[in-house]
Length: 177
Image (cartoon, rainbow, N blue to C red; front, side, top):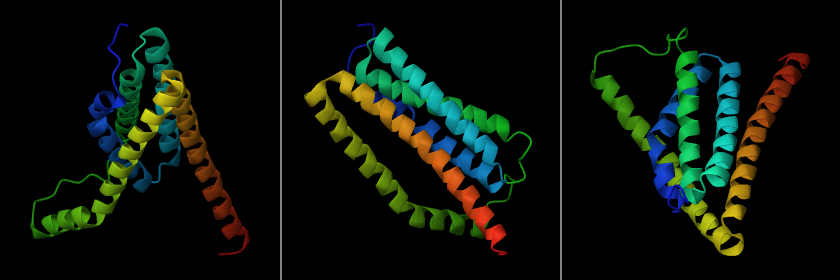
């Protein structure tokens, strides 16, 4: 094989910082009211991930490491798109002095964001276990199919959320709220 077969952790760990930054950038787009850029970023990330998953598994025979790297690269691509989309909408980002209120806000974010961090860790450990089970049961092909399926479900979930929110808005308008 071109790339040694290993588990997805080394490949995915490369993408932790881009993942976090992409989440921040998408939140900034959401605060600015940009629904279309978020949908496009998710679509670009999904398409990039699927294509790179197929290339790393089928062409380079990279296995789990390749799938992890593909996911990492897809977050980088989505993050770059978000940064480009934010070029004209930077009213959310303001420079400020680091005063006491700033540090209180940082402490609040760390306090209330801790549960989200534990949830992400739980999900990562759970996915590691699922990958091990799939490798034992069906080999690397089963993991690749599962990865593709979860990517598609993630995109469908975003589209479903967008449709649901649009319908809720329309129903509120028709109800006179």
